[in-house]
Image (tube, rainbow, N blue to C red; front, side, top):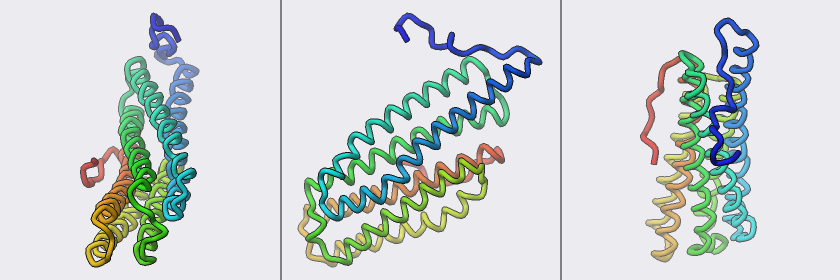
Amino acid sequence: MSQDEDPLERLVPPRTGDSSARAEFQRQLDGLEQQLIALAEGIAEGIEPLTTAFLDADEDVAGDWADQDRQIAEGCEQLEEACYLLLARQSPVATDLRRVVATLRCTAEMRRSSNLLRHVASSLTWVHPPSLPESVREVVGQLGATAAHIYRGAVHAWREQDSFAAVELQDADDQADLLQKVLLTEIYTGEQSVEESVSLALIARYYERVADHGVELARAVSYVVTGERLSGAPND
C-alpha cells in the first residue's frame, strides 16, 4: 500500500439490509479473532521450549526468541491496525464492538508476554542455570510449565468462546504466584551470587506476569460473551 493510499478504502461499508455485506463484516470479525488465536498460540507453544533452553543454557535456542518476539510484535501491530480500521469504517455495536475492543486489549497482553519471555532468554548473559541448585531449576521449570498451561487455556477459551475459562485458570495463576514466592525463598536461603539472585528474582517475576497476561486473555473472552469484565490485577 502506498503512503498516499487511504487504508480505509480497503473496507467496504455495509448497506442496511445487505445480508452479504453483513456476512462479510462477520467474516472480518472472525478473521481478527483467528489472528489473535494464532499469535497467542505461538506464545503458548514457545514457553516450555524456551524454559528448557534457559535451564540448559542453550543460547542458540534461547536466542531464537528474539526473532519470535519481533514477529509477534509485528503481528500485534497488524492486528491493532485491522481493529482500528474496522472500528472506523464499520462502527460496530453491542457484541460486535466487544469483540473488537477485546481483541485490541489482547494485543497488549500478548506483546508484553513476548517481551517478558525475551527477557528470560537474555538472562543467560548473567546466570548459568546448569550450575544452579536442582531445587531452583525445578521451580523455574514449574513456573514455565504453569505459564504455558495458562496460555494454552486462554487459546482454548478464545477458540471455544468459553466464558468460564478465566475463573478456572485463576487457580493456575495462584499457583504461579506461589511458585514465585518459593523461588524467592530459595534465592534468599541459597548461596547464589548477588548477580544470580537478582536475575532469578526477575525471572520469577517475568513468568508470574506472563501467567497474569494469559489469564487476562481469558478474561477478555468473558467480556465478549457476557458483556461483564472480570476484575484482575493491573498489568505491567
